[in-house]
Image (cartoon, rainbow, N blue to C red; front, top):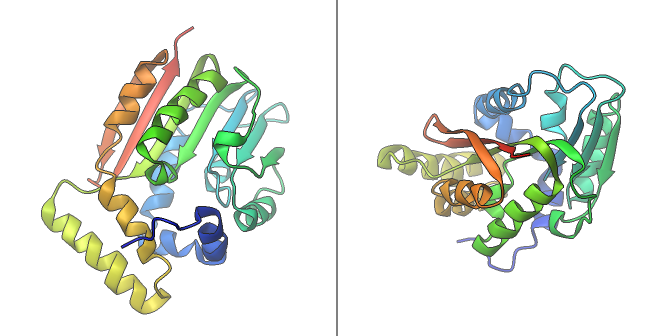
Length: 224
């Protein structure tokens, strides 16, 4: 079981150098899903972009169509993740904010696009409500939000396989550091609650879907 007292910033600092294991372990499916998410916006030219829980900058690396007027801000509380992201994104115009998103004091209604991938499952229920409120407050009218997260498979056999794969198989090769993530996935059945909270806060759902019975995507737009 995961410790209730785990410090997530310390944990992600500790795995920052090995985080690419997730990509290999997923047979590059996580990269594919990230790319599909980011590409739902056809062009990032002249846009203000906010990437939450940004990690090593994987979402931003998938942005293809941008220009020198594309303003990108990333927010992550992990110092080590931010250091790696700085190197990975050195050819981009990026402002890095090294804070917990809930304490970030970002300017209101300042972003055309908000991205967040693979950080939502760590939120507590009350934090999910605050998360949706902050997203709505940060988006410009007609701004769009793209959210991606792993969820517990509905198929019982797949769920058991995932449990074995993360807690047993990967631990054999990479140690126990990644097995800590499984309980977060196990308790995160879907993003339906978050979707409902977003609709309460003036966001219209463009798309909500499950992919490969392991990922869910929310694409929403703030109503002007």
